[in-house]
Every structure is written in C-alpha cells, then in structure tokens.
Image (cartoon, rainbow, N blue to C red):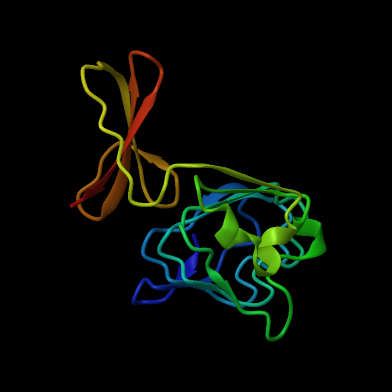
Length: 173
C-alpha cells in the first residue's frame, strides 16, 4: 500500500502500479511532494477531513484522475513553492466537496477543476438511520480491500439496508 509516516500523519507516496480508487486514511494531515507522481492508473482519490496541507507536485502526471473527493469543510492548504499541486491534466476532474463549502474551495488551485459539486455530507455530520433492516454487511480495511476476519486496527463497515441505502461505520479495535 501507501508509504505513511510512523506517526500516521504524513502520506509520503502511493504505489504507481495501483489502479482505480484510493481512500487516503483518516488521520493523515499532510500529503507529501510527489505522493501520487506519475500514476496513470489512479482515477479517484478521497481526501479525508483530517488533511490540512497538500504539497507541490502531489498529483503530477496523474492523467486519468477523474474525481477528487475532499471531505474537509475548509479546503486544505496547497503548497506550491516548487510547482503546482493539481496540474492541467487534473483540471478535467470533478471535485466533490461538503455541502455548503463552495466558497472555501474557490481559492488557489481548488477553483480550477472542470466542475466542483458540493454534494458530500458535511464533515463530522452523522445520519441516524432507524427502523431499517440490514440485508448485507461488508468490512473493509483502510486501503479499501474487503476483509472477512480482523483482530485489531481500524476498519470500515458498510451495511446495505432494505431500501438499498447504505450505512457506513468506522470500527476501532
């Protein structure tokens, strides 16, 4: 998986050969320079609300990046001291942000995406779902891989309810 600092606060790099979608683990506060450099297979990235800063060249040459999900109510700071964070090839991507936070994301390079949609629940909000039956339950590690057994760590539980909505929970063991 990704190379993360021992403190679990800095994402240093993401393997070039991994494809598809990546959920940056909650708790990461900084994305290092060139963390996703030249990953032609990355299509979607989820940036948790804990990320405060993204360094230069973080998404350089990520030509197939189509969707960026940023869950912070305030846009993370972009360090552009030695280059851009999101390059022209990323500008065709759609940026998804929390509902009601559009003004914060019009600054810096955040405002340069092809489309910005404020369709995410606000960070920290929780929807209470009552009187719905669970028809399926799946568990995932923080890398997004489905797992069947676990002993300790942080996991995501996704329950499909009888009305086809989903309930997502974080489990810490």
